[in-house]
Length: 124
Image 1: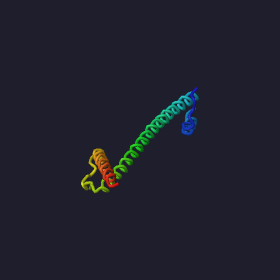
Image 2: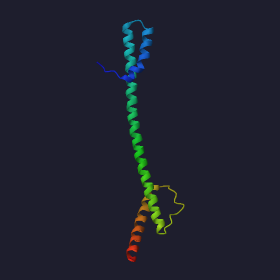
Image 3: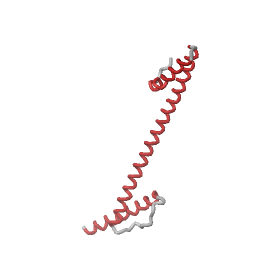
């Protein structure tokens, strides 16, 4: 025997009342009720699948956003380090390709920080 779904049971109740009000043949009542119940079950299951897919997409988007925010924060930190040693980041460096720019700045900043570290160790 098929187990019912409380969500479908709530939705089917007014349909059942309408069927019983307008259909007098008990076999027809059972058949119409069962088909309506099955249709609601299919829709409910499809909505459940859709909700799971949507939840996964939202989670991935949130993860991607966090990665982008971390990259932006690191980028800002590297730009500050470059500015600290007197390197001016060109004002026209619009982020047309922020990944390439980020990787390039990251390399330059690391080199500049190493150079700064070497200068500081010479002064000591």
